[in-house]
Length: 97
Image 1: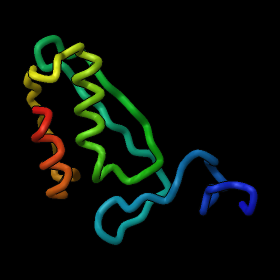
Image 2: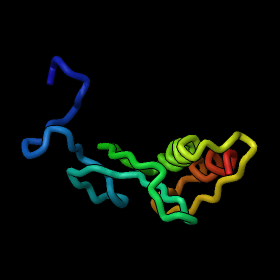
Image 3: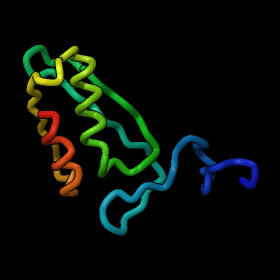
Image 4: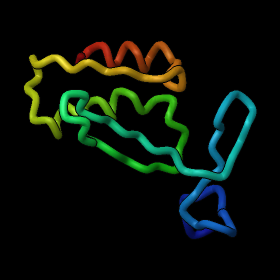
């Protein structure tokens, strides 16, 4: 650990990390971000991470918009669950929608 930037090691899965799931609940896990085109029901973005995803809405939305080859002025409707609960997440996402 002294030779890496990692601050934790999982003995069962070296890529997973302790993630705060809800308030004080911690699990050794992964998070995934997925975006689906509602017209064709096709996945347009997916990403697995080993960090908390409370601030991932903007990045996932931008990547989905890029994958759909939408222009900056094109709108994108985003639906998200309450896991993206920070005002900063909503504010950032509202700039691209």
